[in-house]
Image (cartoon, rainbow, N blue to C red):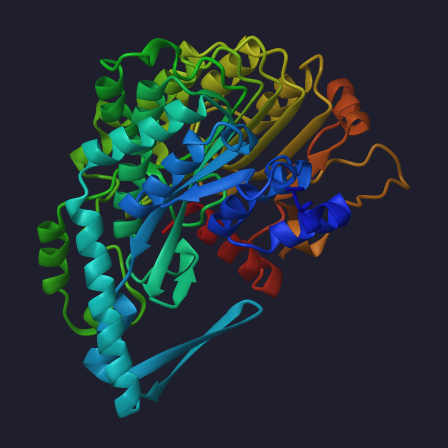
Length: 498
C-alpha cells in the first residue's frame, strides 16, 4: 500500500516555521513526531526553542529535563533564563484589610496615588487570589535548596553547553498579575529569594559541568540584587563541590548585581516596625520604609565577610572579555565602607583578555582604581556610573584612564567626591568651541552655571584628554530646583537604592 505524503511538505518551509512559532512547545513536539519532514523542519523551529525559562518549580524543571533529554531538540537551546519567582501578597493583604484598591499614576517626575472602594465581588476575588498566592508560597517553601540544585544540575548536565544563563526575577501579585520587581510592596523578600536562586544556579553550574559563554545575574533587574555577604559565604560552599575549579573557566561575559548587607531575620524587622509611631508609622503604611534594616554603622554591615566574594568569583574567570558589576545600597546611610570590594578586585584580579568593563554604584579609592587600570591595559570600553571616590582626585583618575592604549569609548556618569558631583564640563580649547554634551538629560543648572553629570567620550575626545583637555572646576554654586534635577535624582534612586 502506497504511503500518503505529509500534506505539510507542500507548504513553503518559512510558512511552516511561522505556524510552529505560534504553537505551544508541547504541541510542536507532538507535531514533529508525525513525520520525518516535520522532525527536521529547520532553523525557524529551532529559533522557537532557543531561549528557555524555568522558575525552578518542580513542574518547570521537569519540563526542562524533558526538553534537554531530546536528542535533536536540546542542541537548539542556546539560553536558559533562571527566574527568581517572588509571590508578593502585600497589595492583596492591604485590599482585604482596607476594602480599597490603590491606583498609582506616574506623570513625568510626579507620582499620584488614589484609592477606590471594592465591591463585594471584588473582595471575594481578592480573597480567592490571596489563597492561591499562599499556596504558591507554600510550594516554593517546601522545595528545598538542595532539591532545586540537584534538579537544575541534572538539566544543565543534559544540555552540556549553553551560550548564556541569565538569572532574572519577577514579581507575582495575583494569579493574573506578573510585574517588575521594582513594584514590590516589600523589597527585602525579593533580595532574599534573589540570593537563594543565585546559590541554586551557581551550585548547579559547578555540579553539572555545563560549558557557558555568558553568565548574567540580575543585570537589568530593578531593585533586585544578591548581597555581597551571600556571595562570599556561598564561595566556601561551592569550593568543596566537584567541578568547582573549572566551572566558570569558559566564561567570556559576566554580570552581577550585588548589594550591601540585608537583614534576613524577619522578627527583627517586625520588631522595629512595631515600634513605629505617629508620622513614621503612617509613612511606612503608605510608602514602606527601611525600618528594621541595617544602617551604615551596624557592625554586621561592615564586617570583612561582606567584601572578598566578588573578587574571588572574578578570579575563576580567566577568559573574561567583559564584565558588569552593579551595587545596590540597602543601608540606611552611605555605602562607602564597601570600597573594600573594589580594593579586593584591584589587589587580586588580573584578567588578560578583558576589553569591556562596567562599574556601577561601587565606591572606590583613587589608589584602587589606578591599580585596576594598570592591571588591565587591554580595556577598550569603560563605563563608570554612580561611583563615590573615597580618596584622591577624579581629575587624576580620568587622566590615567585616558592613557589606556586601546581605549576607544569612555562613559562617565555621577562621579562623586566628598558628597559633591564632579563636573564633567570641560574648559573650552577655543573661543568657538561647542559643548554638545551639555543637554537637559545629562546636566542641571546651578547658581552660576551648569553641572554636567553624564558624558560619553569618543575616540577623538579621548585623544584630547591625553593631550590636555581639562575639566572646569569653577565654583558654580548650589544646584537649582528643576525638573531635570528631580528626574536625575529619581533615576539614581531607582537604579542604586531600595
